Length: 165
View 1 (tube, one colour):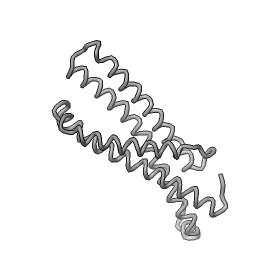
View 2 (spheres, one colour):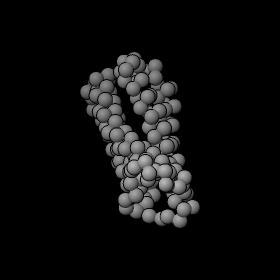
View 3 (cartoon, helix red, strand yellow):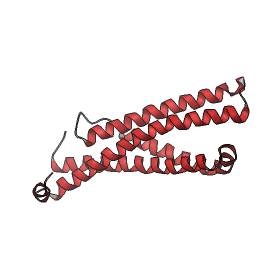
View 4 (spheres, helix red, strand yellow):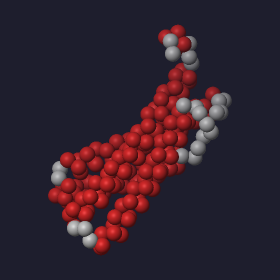
């Protein structure tokens, strides 16, 4: 966009572009965090097997970690890709906002759980892994909240402007 095009846009167009950019960024973050989920699940499985031994009693725990990891992966991928598509004004609007709110809620609960388990996790994994997990979870919460807020404001502004894609 050239400088002349930017100066001739209305304030509403500029705000709409801001929300679109924010939605694209937050959607991209959700996609990246879905990949983090896979990595974190693998680390948890490896740590459990090394810490408790390779026994048959761990199979329910490993299965649970894998199932939760897959659900989280699919959920974040769907929300992230849907948000990016809406931010790029491609395709139809998808009902991903409710899932985004659910991700934010789960992330908040996960953050509380991480803080409660921090001393135990430091003994089991060392200092670096729990701290990285804590920072990433805070960032996931921020990205999910930014995604929901940006999408809501963008949709509301589009309705006010009479634009429906």
